[in-house]
Length: 289
Image 1 (spheres, helix red, strand yellow):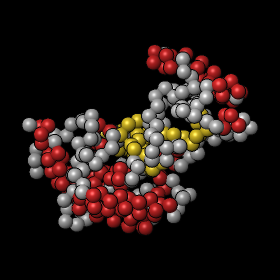
Image 2 (cartoon, rainbow, N blue to C red):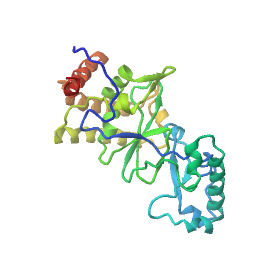
Image 3 (tube, rainbow, N blue to C red):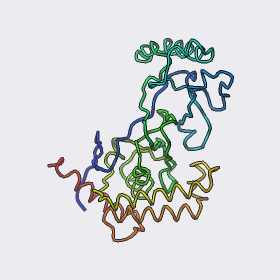
Image 4 (cartoon, helix red, strand yellow):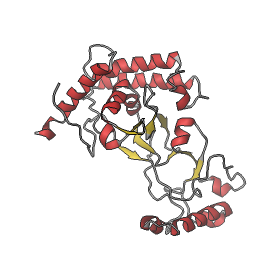
């Protein structure tokens, strides 16, 4: 194959890929984002207006319930902090936490203690992507959420209104690319938006191919939904994956492999690597010249 060196890219090389960013950062000392298991302030109706589901890394992979105070957007009324003892206490504690920080940026954010320090939440459906995944996983475990679920910065996220991003990252083609060019933390696979996602060389997809891949991804989600009690860690346990889920992923792989130029579903890592590097060389040819 071609002699290709894969380097970081600030934007995806493939037109079909959405930009991946970190989730929103709270820097709050667990006052805006209380620890998992903390009861919601049910007796304070004003505070409950701002309670939203929160997804950190553990919550994403292990399906742990957690919530946060999300005081952002047009619906936030600053006067509510005065009206609600619960909100006032949380905001004052967050302010004190930030003022005591050794980081200048965190100290400055104490001027707006009701808000996360970095807000990147999407106003549409998105995928939440764990930063690290066990080397034993067959697929990169991700989940789709609506805009009302707040994603923390221990995860990456990408807007995914139609499900294409979910389907692509859930394929064997992606995790093969990740294993070849991605980093590691100990032996675990380490996702990076600039190195493993932005360089993922998805060919230009016509409308029919695009829809076929989206539909195959939806069947993966539908199969997972048959067991809503299972977490991503349980769904993708390499020693106990449900046969129906494996079958759904095989069908998704078949469509993604064909989109990359394979005549049929591929069976080996080497076959996928050959197509991946050939497509990467093609998509980055102008930049290398």
